[in-house]
Amino acid sequence: MSALIIPIVLTFAGLLLAIATYQSIRRGGARFYTLEREAILRRAMLTLLGSTLLFIAAVGYMASQELQSQAAEEEADTLIEGAVTVTPTPELSVFPPTPSPSPTVDAAIPTATATPIICRAIVEGTSGNGLTLRDAPGGADLGILPEATFVTLIQEEPPQEANGITWRKIRDNISGDEGWVAEQFLSLGPGCE
Image 1 (tube, rainbow, N blue to C red):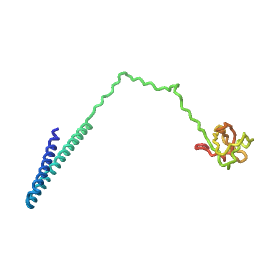
Image 2: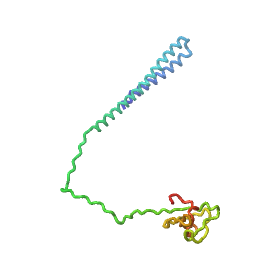
Image 3: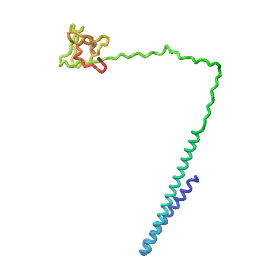
Image 4: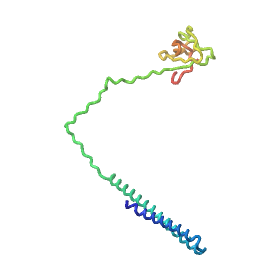
């Protein structure tokens, strides 16, 4: 609290000087002749300058107090960081020390299994004629899959070559029918080969 007394006194004195200047200008403005008015205005200018200096002194005093308190805090922090700390040496309560048990794997915890990748494809490039579903690569017709039919590739059966065409085994997602189709008319989804 005592640190605030000086800035408050300086500010109050500056305010009083500013009020006195205003009163002096008002009194001498209309009653006196030109030379007397100039003298009054000079005095007013000097008192306003004094008022401004008192305000600046109050702010400067408060700033110096703040800098001193920050410097004191930094010095205290430095003293704490530079202190030597003594760590006690641990003592063994049991001699010789017993080994700690090793962790065992709990059989009840399920193990991670790889999730199978489901490859999907769309029938495309048949010019609206559809894609023939066959019972074997190049085999007998089972039906026609319309253009833009959504199918699932059966991964257990790898692609096969027959009659110069690569064949893929698929399942129609709507009817559930399975069969072989020409791979060139399938637009495979991402990650499918």
